[in-house]
Length: 101
Image (tube, rainbow, N blue to C red):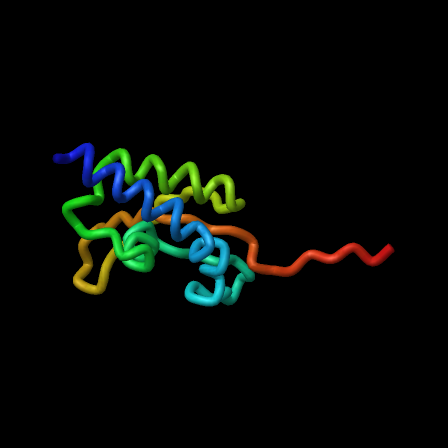
């Protein structure tokens, strides 16, 4: 049953790779010109249910994001209540680079 859910999730990720390509509009560019998105936000965009968010799903997502030019990152900081929190996600340069030749 787990394999069946994982295969469905892999199919969803492949099916929604176009969503990932256009994810910049959902993410937005921050003050420093970098686009950032958490892994949980991406899986929410792909409508992957919580029970299907297995290690295999995260590996598949990491491979897809790397192919699309995103870099994996872990951010550790204090949350609003003062506890340490770690968020995993991805970032890429949001600035448009052009050649002026």
